Image (cartoon, rainbow, N blue to C red; front, side, top):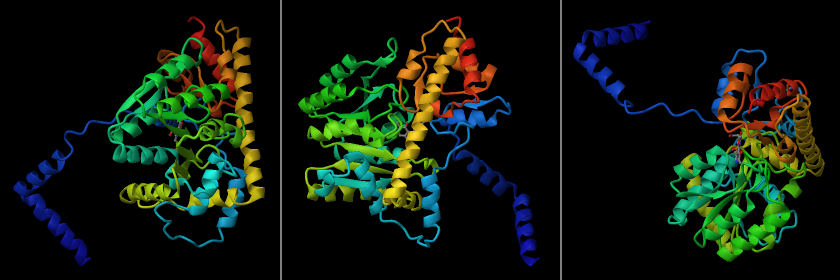
Length: 429
Ligand code: KET
Protein backbone atom coordinates (compact mmCIF):
# COMPACT_ATOMS: atom_id res chain seq x y z
CA UNK A 1 0.00 0.00 0.00
CA UNK A 2 2.72 2.45 1.09
CA UNK A 3 4.76 1.38 -1.94
CA UNK A 4 1.80 2.10 -4.28
CA UNK A 5 1.40 5.58 -2.75
CA UNK A 6 5.09 6.34 -3.24
CA UNK A 7 4.92 5.30 -6.90
CA UNK A 8 1.79 7.42 -7.47
CA UNK A 9 3.39 10.46 -5.83
CA UNK A 10 6.53 10.12 -7.92
CA UNK A 11 4.42 9.83 -11.05
CA UNK A 12 2.38 12.93 -10.25
CA UNK A 13 5.54 14.93 -9.40
CA UNK A 14 6.86 14.06 -12.86
CA UNK A 15 3.58 15.06 -14.45
CA UNK A 16 3.67 18.41 -12.66
CA UNK A 17 7.13 19.21 -13.93
CA UNK A 18 6.73 20.16 -17.59
CA UNK A 19 10.42 20.85 -18.13
CA UNK A 20 11.76 17.49 -16.99
CA UNK A 21 8.76 15.73 -18.57
CA UNK A 22 9.32 17.35 -21.97
CA UNK A 23 13.03 16.84 -21.80
CA UNK A 24 12.87 13.13 -20.98
CA UNK A 25 10.22 12.52 -23.64
CA UNK A 26 12.24 14.30 -26.30
CA UNK A 27 15.49 12.54 -25.49
CA UNK A 28 13.77 9.16 -25.27
CA UNK A 29 12.19 9.49 -28.67
CA UNK A 30 15.35 10.71 -30.39
CA UNK A 31 17.59 7.72 -29.71
CA UNK A 32 16.46 5.65 -32.67
CA UNK A 33 15.18 8.42 -34.95
CA UNK A 34 17.51 7.41 -37.75
CA UNK A 35 16.45 3.75 -37.72
CA UNK A 36 14.49 2.71 -40.80
CA UNK A 37 12.33 -0.43 -40.85
CA UNK A 38 14.35 -3.45 -42.01
CA UNK A 39 13.24 -5.00 -45.28
CA UNK A 40 11.28 -8.23 -44.84
CA UNK A 41 13.39 -11.37 -45.07
CA UNK A 42 12.70 -12.97 -48.46
CA UNK A 43 12.17 -16.40 -46.87
CA UNK A 44 11.03 -15.95 -43.27
CA UNK A 45 8.90 -12.94 -44.34
CA UNK A 46 6.86 -15.39 -46.44
CA UNK A 47 6.06 -17.43 -43.33
CA UNK A 48 4.94 -14.25 -41.55
CA UNK A 49 2.59 -13.36 -44.41
CA UNK A 50 1.27 -16.94 -44.53
CA UNK A 51 0.51 -16.96 -40.81
CA UNK A 52 -1.37 -13.66 -41.11
CA UNK A 53 -3.64 -14.95 -43.92
CA UNK A 54 -7.00 -16.20 -42.55
CA UNK A 55 -7.91 -18.12 -45.74
CA UNK A 56 -8.67 -21.84 -45.16
CA UNK A 57 -7.17 -22.60 -48.59
CA UNK A 58 -3.74 -21.16 -47.84
CA UNK A 59 -0.64 -23.16 -48.72
CA UNK A 60 2.91 -22.46 -47.51
CA UNK A 61 5.63 -23.63 -49.86
CA UNK A 62 7.99 -20.87 -48.76
CA UNK A 63 10.39 -21.90 -46.02
CA UNK A 64 12.34 -25.14 -46.38
CA UNK A 65 10.75 -27.02 -43.52
CA UNK A 66 9.55 -30.60 -43.92
CA UNK A 67 5.87 -31.44 -43.52
CA UNK A 68 4.18 -34.85 -43.57
CA UNK A 69 1.52 -35.68 -46.11
CA UNK A 70 -1.08 -34.00 -43.90
CA UNK A 71 0.92 -30.78 -43.98
CA UNK A 72 1.96 -31.17 -40.34
CA UNK A 73 5.46 -30.58 -38.92
CA UNK A 74 7.23 -33.85 -38.13
CA UNK A 75 9.09 -34.96 -35.03
CA UNK A 76 11.12 -37.98 -36.08
CA UNK A 77 10.60 -41.21 -34.13
CA UNK A 78 14.35 -41.40 -33.41
CA UNK A 79 14.15 -37.91 -31.90
CA UNK A 80 11.15 -38.89 -29.74
CA UNK A 81 13.08 -41.90 -28.45
CA UNK A 82 16.20 -39.79 -27.80
CA UNK A 83 14.01 -37.31 -25.89
CA UNK A 84 12.66 -40.15 -23.72
CA UNK A 85 16.20 -41.24 -22.90
CA UNK A 86 17.41 -37.71 -22.16
CA UNK A 87 14.41 -36.98 -19.93
CA UNK A 88 16.11 -38.90 -17.12
CA UNK A 89 19.12 -36.60 -17.16
CA UNK A 90 19.24 -33.54 -14.94
CA UNK A 91 22.39 -32.18 -16.57
CA UNK A 92 21.85 -28.48 -17.20
CA UNK A 93 25.43 -27.21 -17.04
CA UNK A 94 27.11 -25.05 -19.66
CA UNK A 95 28.62 -26.94 -22.56
CA UNK A 96 32.25 -26.03 -23.33
CA UNK A 97 32.73 -23.10 -25.75
CA UNK A 98 33.18 -25.61 -28.58
CA UNK A 99 29.98 -27.46 -27.63
CA UNK A 100 29.35 -31.15 -27.07
CA UNK A 101 32.47 -33.16 -27.88
CA UNK A 102 30.38 -36.29 -28.45
CA UNK A 103 27.98 -34.56 -30.81
CA UNK A 104 30.83 -33.03 -32.80
CA UNK A 105 32.61 -36.41 -33.04
CA UNK A 106 29.51 -38.10 -34.48
CA UNK A 107 28.79 -35.18 -36.80
CA UNK A 108 32.27 -35.25 -38.31
CA UNK A 109 31.79 -38.93 -39.20
CA UNK A 110 28.76 -38.02 -41.30
CA UNK A 111 30.74 -35.54 -43.38
CA UNK A 112 34.25 -37.00 -43.47
CA UNK A 113 33.30 -40.71 -43.30
CA UNK A 114 33.17 -43.23 -40.44
CA UNK A 115 36.76 -44.31 -40.95
CA UNK A 116 38.20 -40.98 -41.93
CA UNK A 117 41.97 -40.73 -41.48
CA UNK A 118 41.52 -37.01 -40.78
CA UNK A 119 39.37 -37.80 -37.76
CA UNK A 120 41.85 -40.45 -36.56
CA UNK A 121 44.76 -38.04 -37.00
CA UNK A 122 42.83 -35.29 -35.16
CA UNK A 123 43.38 -32.91 -38.07
CA UNK A 124 39.91 -31.35 -37.91
CA UNK A 125 39.17 -28.21 -35.90
CA UNK A 126 35.47 -28.49 -35.13
CA UNK A 127 32.96 -26.78 -32.89
CA UNK A 128 29.23 -27.15 -32.31
CA UNK A 129 27.45 -24.26 -33.99
CA UNK A 130 24.09 -22.54 -33.86
CA UNK A 131 22.81 -24.71 -36.67
CA UNK A 132 23.95 -24.14 -40.27
CA UNK A 133 23.53 -20.37 -40.15
CA UNK A 134 25.75 -20.15 -37.09
CA UNK A 135 28.39 -22.37 -38.69
CA UNK A 136 28.51 -20.19 -41.82
CA UNK A 137 28.69 -17.03 -39.73
CA UNK A 138 31.43 -18.35 -37.47
CA UNK A 139 33.46 -19.36 -40.50
CA UNK A 140 32.87 -15.98 -42.15
CA UNK A 141 34.13 -14.22 -39.00
CA UNK A 142 37.14 -16.54 -38.88
CA UNK A 143 37.83 -15.81 -42.55
CA UNK A 144 37.68 -12.06 -41.92
CA UNK A 145 39.95 -12.26 -38.90
CA UNK A 146 42.70 -14.38 -40.42
CA UNK A 147 42.49 -13.78 -44.18
CA UNK A 148 41.15 -10.21 -44.17
CA UNK A 149 42.25 -9.42 -47.71
CA UNK A 150 40.66 -12.34 -49.50
CA UNK A 151 37.12 -12.52 -50.81
CA UNK A 152 34.43 -15.16 -50.97
CA UNK A 153 32.83 -16.36 -54.20
CA UNK A 154 29.13 -17.17 -53.84
CA UNK A 155 27.00 -18.95 -56.48
CA UNK A 156 24.22 -17.21 -58.41
CA UNK A 157 21.65 -17.85 -57.17
CA UNK A 158 22.12 -19.00 -53.59
CA UNK A 159 20.30 -19.15 -50.26
CA UNK A 160 19.50 -15.46 -49.68
CA UNK A 161 20.97 -15.44 -46.19
CA UNK A 162 24.46 -16.30 -47.46
CA UNK A 163 24.76 -12.71 -48.68
CA UNK A 164 23.70 -11.32 -45.30
CA UNK A 165 26.09 -13.59 -43.40
CA UNK A 166 29.24 -12.67 -45.32
CA UNK A 167 28.13 -9.02 -45.55
CA UNK A 168 27.80 -8.75 -41.77
CA UNK A 169 31.16 -10.48 -41.34
CA UNK A 170 32.54 -7.79 -43.69
CA UNK A 171 34.06 -10.24 -46.13
CA UNK A 172 34.06 -8.96 -49.71
CA UNK A 173 31.67 -10.98 -51.86
CA UNK A 174 32.07 -11.96 -55.48
CA UNK A 175 29.75 -14.25 -57.39
CA UNK A 176 30.23 -17.21 -59.70
CA UNK A 177 27.94 -18.61 -62.39
CA UNK A 178 25.93 -21.63 -61.33
CA UNK A 179 22.49 -21.87 -62.88
CA UNK A 180 21.37 -21.71 -66.47
CA UNK A 181 17.82 -20.26 -66.65
CA UNK A 182 17.21 -21.60 -70.18
CA UNK A 183 18.23 -25.19 -69.53
CA UNK A 184 17.13 -24.97 -65.89
CA UNK A 185 20.32 -26.90 -65.20
CA UNK A 186 23.92 -26.27 -64.19
CA UNK A 187 25.94 -23.65 -66.03
CA UNK A 188 29.04 -25.81 -65.79
CA UNK A 189 31.20 -23.91 -68.26
CA UNK A 190 30.31 -20.57 -66.64
CA UNK A 191 31.17 -22.00 -63.24
CA UNK A 192 34.50 -23.40 -64.42
CA UNK A 193 35.42 -20.11 -66.12
CA UNK A 194 34.74 -18.18 -62.93
CA UNK A 195 36.78 -20.64 -60.87
CA UNK A 196 39.60 -20.32 -63.39
CA UNK A 197 39.48 -16.53 -63.49
CA UNK A 198 39.31 -15.96 -59.72
CA UNK A 199 42.60 -14.84 -58.14
CA UNK A 200 44.69 -17.76 -56.83
CA UNK A 201 43.77 -18.77 -53.31
CA UNK A 202 40.21 -17.44 -53.35
CA UNK A 203 37.49 -18.70 -51.04
CA UNK A 204 34.46 -20.38 -52.64
CA UNK A 205 31.15 -21.22 -51.04
CA UNK A 206 29.82 -24.52 -52.40
CA UNK A 207 26.51 -26.23 -51.62
CA UNK A 208 27.55 -29.80 -50.81
CA UNK A 209 24.25 -31.26 -52.09
CA UNK A 210 20.65 -30.31 -52.88
CA UNK A 211 21.56 -26.79 -53.94
CA UNK A 212 19.22 -24.13 -52.56
CA UNK A 213 17.25 -22.69 -54.33
CA UNK A 214 17.84 -24.43 -57.67
CA UNK A 215 17.77 -28.15 -56.81
CA UNK A 216 20.59 -28.52 -59.33
CA UNK A 217 23.84 -30.25 -58.30
CA UNK A 218 26.98 -31.00 -60.31
CA UNK A 219 27.37 -34.67 -61.29
CA UNK A 220 30.08 -36.73 -59.65
CA UNK A 221 32.26 -36.29 -62.73
CA UNK A 222 31.73 -32.52 -62.65
CA UNK A 223 32.62 -32.40 -58.95
CA UNK A 224 35.89 -34.16 -59.82
CA UNK A 225 36.66 -31.55 -62.44
CA UNK A 226 35.77 -28.72 -60.09
CA UNK A 227 38.01 -30.21 -57.43
CA UNK A 228 40.94 -30.53 -59.85
CA UNK A 229 40.58 -26.93 -60.94
CA UNK A 230 40.38 -25.77 -57.33
CA UNK A 231 43.63 -27.61 -56.75
CA UNK A 232 45.33 -25.98 -59.71
CA UNK A 233 44.19 -22.57 -58.49
CA UNK A 234 44.84 -23.28 -54.80
CA UNK A 235 41.28 -22.17 -53.90
CA UNK A 236 39.66 -22.87 -50.55
CA UNK A 237 36.32 -24.74 -50.65
CA UNK A 238 33.80 -24.03 -47.94
CA UNK A 239 30.91 -26.50 -48.11
CA UNK A 240 27.50 -25.56 -46.78
CA UNK A 241 25.75 -28.88 -46.16
CA UNK A 242 22.28 -28.04 -44.85
CA UNK A 243 20.47 -30.88 -46.62
CA UNK A 244 22.59 -34.01 -46.15
CA UNK A 245 20.22 -36.90 -46.90
CA UNK A 246 17.63 -34.85 -48.75
CA UNK A 247 19.19 -35.21 -52.20
CA UNK A 248 19.40 -39.01 -52.49
CA UNK A 249 17.79 -40.17 -49.26
CA UNK A 250 21.21 -41.39 -48.05
CA UNK A 251 23.47 -39.04 -46.05
CA UNK A 252 26.63 -40.93 -47.09
CA UNK A 253 25.83 -40.55 -50.79
CA UNK A 254 25.04 -36.88 -50.30
CA UNK A 255 28.52 -36.28 -48.87
CA UNK A 256 30.09 -37.39 -52.17
CA UNK A 257 31.19 -33.90 -53.21
CA UNK A 258 33.03 -33.48 -49.93
CA UNK A 259 34.63 -36.92 -50.16
CA UNK A 260 35.94 -36.10 -53.64
CA UNK A 261 37.59 -32.92 -52.38
CA UNK A 262 39.08 -34.84 -49.45
CA UNK A 263 40.47 -37.55 -51.75
CA UNK A 264 42.12 -34.81 -53.78
CA UNK A 265 43.87 -33.48 -50.70
CA UNK A 266 41.99 -30.21 -50.18
CA UNK A 267 41.89 -28.54 -46.80
CA UNK A 268 38.22 -27.66 -46.68
CA UNK A 269 35.71 -26.13 -44.30
CA UNK A 270 32.20 -27.53 -43.71
CA UNK A 271 28.98 -26.20 -42.23
CA UNK A 272 26.61 -28.96 -41.10
CA UNK A 273 23.06 -28.59 -39.86
CA UNK A 274 20.55 -30.91 -38.24
CA UNK A 275 17.64 -28.56 -38.88
CA UNK A 276 16.32 -30.45 -41.88
CA UNK A 277 17.70 -33.97 -41.77
CA UNK A 278 16.82 -34.52 -38.11
CA UNK A 279 13.94 -32.05 -38.04
CA UNK A 280 15.66 -30.12 -35.24
CA UNK A 281 14.93 -26.70 -36.77
CA UNK A 282 14.37 -24.75 -33.57
CA UNK A 283 17.01 -26.57 -31.54
CA UNK A 284 19.73 -24.78 -33.53
CA UNK A 285 22.23 -27.59 -33.66
CA UNK A 286 25.01 -27.93 -36.19
CA UNK A 287 28.77 -28.02 -36.59
CA UNK A 288 31.56 -26.00 -38.16
CA UNK A 289 34.71 -27.88 -39.10
CA UNK A 290 37.98 -26.87 -40.73
CA UNK A 291 40.43 -29.50 -41.95
CA UNK A 292 43.97 -28.51 -40.97
CA UNK A 293 47.50 -29.56 -41.86
CA UNK A 294 48.08 -31.46 -38.65
CA UNK A 295 46.80 -31.90 -35.11
CA UNK A 296 48.74 -28.92 -33.79
CA UNK A 297 47.17 -26.59 -36.33
CA UNK A 298 43.73 -28.04 -35.61
CA UNK A 299 44.11 -27.30 -31.90
CA UNK A 300 45.15 -23.74 -32.72
CA UNK A 301 42.31 -23.14 -35.18
CA UNK A 302 39.76 -24.59 -32.77
CA UNK A 303 41.00 -22.27 -30.01
CA UNK A 304 40.37 -19.32 -32.33
CA UNK A 305 36.90 -20.54 -33.31
CA UNK A 306 36.08 -20.77 -29.61
CA UNK A 307 37.49 -17.31 -29.07
CA UNK A 308 35.09 -16.02 -31.73
CA UNK A 309 32.14 -17.82 -30.14
CA UNK A 310 32.79 -16.67 -26.58
CA UNK A 311 31.82 -12.98 -26.92
CA UNK A 312 28.93 -13.81 -29.30
CA UNK A 313 27.03 -16.52 -27.45
CA UNK A 314 29.63 -17.98 -25.08
CA UNK A 315 28.69 -21.60 -25.66
CA UNK A 316 26.03 -23.37 -27.72
CA UNK A 317 22.75 -24.87 -26.49
CA UNK A 318 22.68 -28.26 -24.82
CA UNK A 319 19.42 -29.99 -25.66
CA UNK A 320 19.72 -30.39 -29.42
CA UNK A 321 23.29 -31.63 -29.01
CA UNK A 322 22.08 -34.26 -26.55
CA UNK A 323 19.43 -35.42 -29.00
CA UNK A 324 21.95 -35.74 -31.83
CA UNK A 325 24.60 -37.55 -29.81
CA UNK A 326 21.98 -39.92 -28.33
CA UNK A 327 20.77 -40.85 -31.82
CA UNK A 328 24.09 -41.11 -33.59
CA UNK A 329 25.82 -42.79 -30.65
CA UNK A 330 23.35 -45.70 -30.68
CA UNK A 331 23.49 -48.01 -33.72
CA UNK A 332 19.76 -48.83 -33.51
CA UNK A 333 18.65 -45.22 -33.24
CA UNK A 334 21.04 -44.25 -35.99
CA UNK A 335 19.60 -46.81 -38.38
CA UNK A 336 16.07 -45.64 -37.47
CA UNK A 337 17.20 -42.08 -38.31
CA UNK A 338 18.58 -43.20 -41.68
CA UNK A 339 15.24 -44.86 -42.47
CA UNK A 340 13.35 -41.73 -41.52
CA UNK A 341 15.59 -39.48 -43.64
CA UNK A 342 14.86 -41.75 -46.60
CA UNK A 343 11.11 -41.57 -45.95
CA UNK A 344 11.25 -37.75 -45.99
CA UNK A 345 13.35 -37.64 -49.16
CA UNK A 346 11.10 -40.19 -50.90
CA UNK A 347 7.92 -38.32 -50.04
CA UNK A 348 9.37 -35.21 -51.66
CA UNK A 349 10.44 -37.15 -54.75
CA UNK A 350 6.91 -38.57 -55.01
CA UNK A 351 5.39 -35.10 -54.80
CA UNK A 352 7.66 -33.89 -57.62
CA UNK A 353 6.20 -36.57 -59.88
CA UNK A 354 2.62 -35.79 -58.85
CA UNK A 355 3.09 -32.04 -59.32
CA UNK A 356 4.58 -32.51 -62.78
CA UNK A 357 1.91 -35.01 -63.86
CA UNK A 358 -0.87 -32.76 -62.57
CA UNK A 359 0.45 -29.82 -64.60
CA UNK A 360 0.75 -31.99 -67.69
CA UNK A 361 -2.79 -33.36 -67.24
CA UNK A 362 -4.12 -29.80 -67.03
CA UNK A 363 -2.68 -29.31 -70.51
CA UNK A 364 0.01 -26.83 -69.52
CA UNK A 365 1.81 -25.61 -72.64
CA UNK A 366 5.08 -25.38 -70.70
CA UNK A 367 7.62 -28.08 -69.94
CA UNK A 368 7.71 -29.16 -66.28
CA UNK A 369 10.48 -31.70 -66.70
CA UNK A 370 12.71 -29.75 -64.32
CA UNK A 371 10.29 -30.39 -61.45
CA UNK A 372 11.32 -34.06 -61.41
CA UNK A 373 14.90 -33.50 -62.54
CA UNK A 374 15.81 -31.16 -59.71
CA UNK A 375 16.65 -32.67 -56.34
CA UNK A 376 16.45 -31.89 -52.65
CA UNK A 377 13.87 -29.80 -50.86
CA UNK A 378 13.28 -27.20 -53.54
CA UNK A 379 11.95 -26.82 -57.02
CA UNK A 380 13.19 -23.74 -58.83
CA UNK A 381 10.03 -23.45 -60.85
CA UNK A 382 10.83 -20.66 -63.28
CA UNK A 383 7.76 -18.70 -62.11
CA UNK A 384 8.31 -14.96 -62.36
CA UNK A 385 7.93 -12.64 -59.34
CA UNK A 386 4.68 -11.35 -60.88
CA UNK A 387 3.32 -14.88 -61.26
CA UNK A 388 4.26 -15.62 -57.65
CA UNK A 389 2.45 -12.44 -56.57
CA UNK A 390 -0.67 -13.67 -58.39
CA UNK A 391 -0.42 -17.07 -56.72
CA UNK A 392 -0.38 -15.32 -53.37
CA UNK A 393 -3.06 -12.70 -53.97
CA UNK A 394 -5.49 -14.91 -55.92
CA UNK A 395 -4.81 -18.38 -54.50
CA UNK A 396 -3.26 -17.79 -51.04
CA UNK A 397 -0.20 -19.77 -52.08
CA UNK A 398 2.95 -18.50 -50.39
CA UNK A 399 6.45 -18.91 -51.83
CA UNK A 400 9.58 -16.83 -52.27
CA UNK A 401 9.43 -14.35 -55.16
CA UNK A 402 12.30 -16.08 -56.97
CA UNK A 403 9.82 -18.85 -57.84
CA UNK A 404 11.26 -21.38 -55.42
CA UNK A 405 8.74 -23.99 -54.29
CA UNK A 406 9.53 -25.84 -51.08
CA UNK A 407 8.53 -29.34 -52.19
CA UNK A 408 8.56 -30.32 -48.51
CA UNK A 409 5.33 -28.34 -48.12
CA UNK A 410 3.54 -30.07 -51.03
CA UNK A 411 1.11 -32.82 -50.01
CA UNK A 412 -1.40 -35.20 -51.57
CA UNK A 413 -4.05 -32.80 -50.25
CA UNK A 414 -2.72 -29.58 -51.79
CA UNK A 415 -0.81 -30.70 -54.90
CA UNK A 416 -3.89 -30.51 -57.16
CA UNK A 417 -4.77 -27.03 -55.92
CA UNK A 418 -1.16 -25.91 -56.36
CA UNK A 419 -0.88 -27.36 -59.89
CA UNK A 420 -4.15 -25.73 -60.94
CA UNK A 421 -3.08 -22.34 -59.60
CA UNK A 422 0.35 -22.59 -61.28
CA UNK A 423 -1.38 -23.52 -64.52
CA UNK A 424 -3.74 -20.54 -64.28
CA UNK A 425 -0.93 -18.01 -63.80
CA UNK A 426 1.39 -19.51 -66.44
CA UNK A 427 -0.89 -20.75 -69.24
CA UNK A 428 -0.74 -17.52 -71.22
CA UNK A 429 3.03 -17.13 -70.92
N1 KET B 1 22.35 -23.25 -45.65
C1 KET B 1 21.40 -23.37 -46.58
C2 KET B 1 21.81 -23.59 -47.99
C3 KET B 1 20.05 -23.27 -46.21
O1 KET B 1 19.13 -23.42 -47.15
C4 KET B 1 19.70 -23.04 -44.87
C5 KET B 1 18.29 -22.89 -44.48
C6 KET B 1 20.75 -22.95 -43.95
C7 KET B 1 22.06 -23.03 -44.37
C8 KET B 1 20.54 -22.69 -42.51
O2 KET B 1 19.71 -23.52 -41.83
P1 KET B 1 19.79 -23.61 -40.24
O3 KET B 1 18.39 -23.67 -39.82
O4 KET B 1 20.53 -22.42 -39.71
O5 KET B 1 20.54 -24.86 -39.97
N2 KET B 1 17.37 -22.63 -45.30
C9 KET B 1 15.93 -22.56 -45.09
C10 KET B 1 15.49 -21.84 -43.86
C11 KET B 1 16.01 -20.44 -43.72
O6 KET B 1 15.96 -19.64 -44.67
O7 KET B 1 16.49 -20.13 -42.62
C12 KET B 1 15.27 -22.03 -46.37
O8 KET B 1 15.96 -21.71 -47.32
O9 KET B 1 14.03 -21.98 -46.40
